[in-house]
Image (cartoon, rainbow, N blue to C red; front, side, top):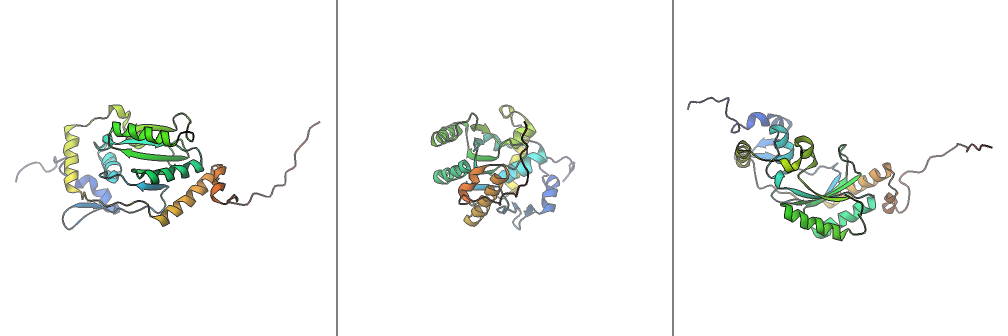
Length: 244
């Protein structure tokens, strides 16, 4: 079989996936399918009320975009309602709402340096129309609670995507990209089993939220410590200087 074996992109996906195989996040199963080591992150800041079905964010964001420098077509079909609670109390209220609605969603503390917020919540939708309906629902359910301007918005894809690839209204796909996505779709295991955050991990993450609120001066943390300070206050020795 003749041909130039060094000009096979996008068919030859292994060359660019080597770093992921080496670090153990990917492996090739006995049946020839590429699989991921999926697990709950014990130190995650997020609690998932429900995972988004038919959405492989590890493949799209952690693998495809940084490796091939493109926004996956499935990411271009992802519309997020983003909620930015101002206090820990509002974050807990948002978690309760997400669990009640049982929509694909998560919420937690924002540890990312490029996000200007202490807390965040995300609802995942598959179209602009679905996203608008979700936006209207969340705004109505949180009426009187999150009224600050831009505390709840509807956006396209992940923040990391816009940071790396620019204005989401200008995203597009090429024939090359669609061919590459097809090759990856065929190579990777598709029947991924995901589950909501388990109860014991939820309790651990919630305690992490409380420590985060305390360290950032959010006094509503005391609602979850029976009104007690997380740490005893300092012993203070200064005297006020009075003039005149």
